Length: 162
Image (cartoon, rainbow, N blue to C red; front, side):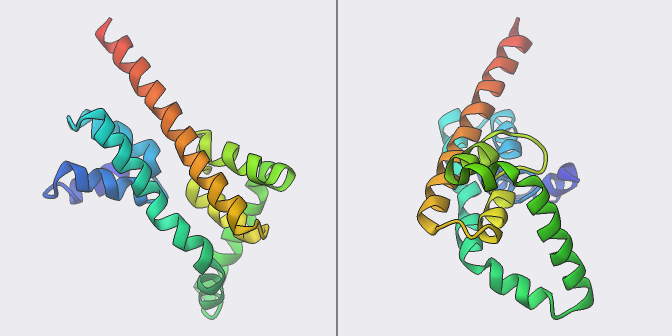
């Protein structure tokens, strides 16, 4: 699916594709950084674009999610989706329930499937995490994820060049 998205964005500059990939809930910066580095964009530029791109959609999402869920619940398919999203997110967010901001940092920062800034934001809203804890947690979590992905890219490059 990610390959289809990238190929449809093919006419755009590589930096724009990297930014869009970082903004998407499917890839976030975990997919954007490897793409940007592989595309030949300088690493620090990839890092900056990816972190900013990952944060652009999730900060407004925190403040708008309840309105979005309320709107979706007015339609049968939207209600099914929002019910699934709420149940799925709450099931995955035990660490945030237990440790609040620290849990959010861990949840967003550890690059595993179905974790990240999007799911962490949804969980923060559902668990009624205060905005200051959310903002600190999601920003630190995105920076942690960027650090881990950077390390993995660096280790992969060493392994490939050996």
